[in-house]
Image 1 (cartoon, helix red, strand yellow):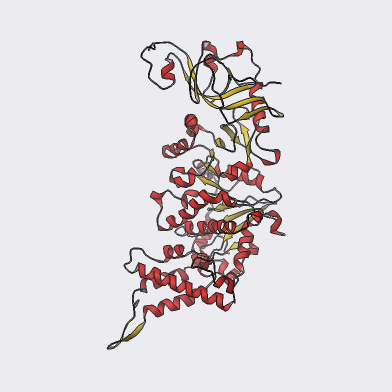
Image 2 (cartoon, one colour):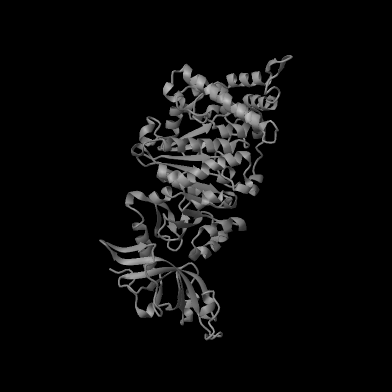
Length: 583
């Protein structure tokens, strides 16, 4: 049965002007005009049998000219004072009564445009419910559908996304503080986790996703100072990122002051020293196959103390001269560099990197780390955690971009060097993305290095089975390059004008007005647009089973309760120990 089987008396009006994907409909019935609302759906007659064109109401105008409704100046021979009630509609797709073996199919394509005087009908009531259900039923195959919530237009209709397209083509989840970003992220993860061989990694910057527990979810955290004595490792969910995993550019960013006049010499000596130390490690372990082809960026362990000893030797070196000994080429030029390196080595906040346990200094350890973070549910053994949540809350803010990007780069590199037939896709969910993939104007030396990794993943990740979900409360501070590679947008309430404009620029031109809803969305309500969504929609996100620990504190309610004085002393102790897990 045809879904859009209207009578002529049901018509809202007739098409009076057409401009590419924009249509102007003349409405004679003032009562129908009063009932109509912006962002509601309408259907228009197509020139092809069995097809209808679907559009979104963008503007309702009374007492204006058709030319002005299109946003153009009237033609010379066109009357300028015509009273006309008009509705401006953005066309978004075509509805087929039958397509192949299927009935009632919607496609995001416009093979035709309405003819002049074609009738336009509102989609409401039972027809709206039936249309929304038809949209949901044809959003990918049953096994590939991802449910976010229900349509605001019809709360009886489940809003589904094509899960393949959502992760394949990268996605963005944005919204101001308290708008429901974490809620939406938790909703996504709850549906990913039960899959037979799920594989996703969430970068949890503030440790707010710890309440997400259960089958399919495994928690990790970057080691804090308290873990250095505890001896905890990967089996306990504690991750070390030893210095030898850092690329040469990461090392220079962290250790060398670019303003130092000796910076070029320091960078050159660092390169020589680290390369020699890696060569010595490979030779001692008889890793001859790697020894023949490794570079300074190859993830090969080496002894930092040996490297430091060599740097000190060069800094104090005396060489034979014509009149006795003289200062070596690098005498005194490495002193500041050595001081910075020694400071990093003794900084307990960086213990996860500079004081990793002996196990993490072994050649085989990288494969163990990669398997823990990247293996799907089936390959996790007894752990059974296809969704891995990594807590970065104890990582110092000045090196946070470097640490997050290094783990992302590690995952990307392993995927890149995996045979295509053996590659298992993995999704990276990047919470608080503005902190480590900033716009170029906001990036410092550490931010620049991190940004390059994420921009490469955004541009090339799909080829190697790496999907990315960018989550941020400040999209205006996130790299434009990264955002431009994302083809799915879940935009919750945004109150900042700069953030709103970023989202508006990401939307198709015909849907630019859709972004006007951003500041008035309710908590947990989102605009969803992109390849994964057949219909640009306003969706109410379904409440996740486990709420992230990111809820806004109710100041007045808390002020009426008894004070938690005993918590202050323990907080001071945690501050001093640089760890919330220390006892």
